[in-house]
Image (cartoon, rainbow, N blue to C red; front, side, top):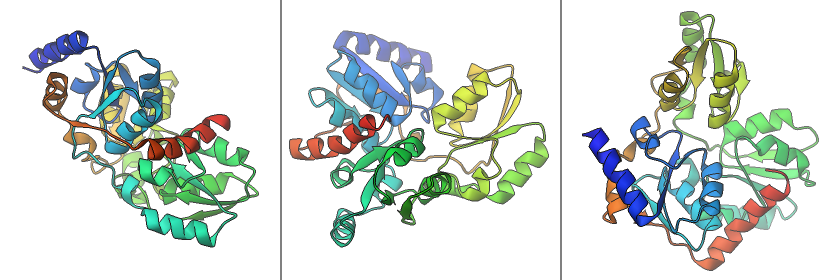
Length: 304
């Protein structure tokens, strides 16, 4: 049944000239029909480069919005309309407006996991892979980093000469990983390296052998000469690495590290989108798109 659905998706994709993007946290059956797999910003860049006029994003809403920001002439479909990102919605527009009014000299740095609307008020956008490099390159000394306090703390601890303010936001799924989980996993797998996403709490990252983005974690594991790894990010990465590196062993840091929003998207959703019967088209006002794009352009200018 799965193979039949995949075959029909591939047929419709070819017939209708559709590009399918899949974030790394999607199920493997979805990755197998995707044209590109990766982190949110990499996928948005790939979408802008292809000639296809229809793009289906198998991920969450802010990712589809980022695709639309960079590809205004394409029809962008979010594969499951209910797939949001709790972190992206944690900072309210009015709250940020008030902060900027009261802190005119403070630059606002937005993690890419934010809504298009919120990006319109931000100075620079960053990804988990580029955040350190970009914040170091910024001339401003006073910075508000939104919304992830864990990624923000990681940056703050690794950048000198900056006054970095944080809010108490972050990924509710990565936050579930605890020091006890680290101790338990290392006791069970003493030879394994711990690879952690910077969205995890400091009690996890300070014990990690490698800290990086999702694709960074995957690349590290693939290139390493080590044979065992504890994966401190969404548990689907354990499965993907098991497929990619059958000669190595991968263990989840905790069974709780599951993004329920990512898991909303099913292969059936993707098939319905290809049929033109499902998903939600992402529509942004041009004023909003251009204002949101400005902070992404600044990220690129700083080498992100």
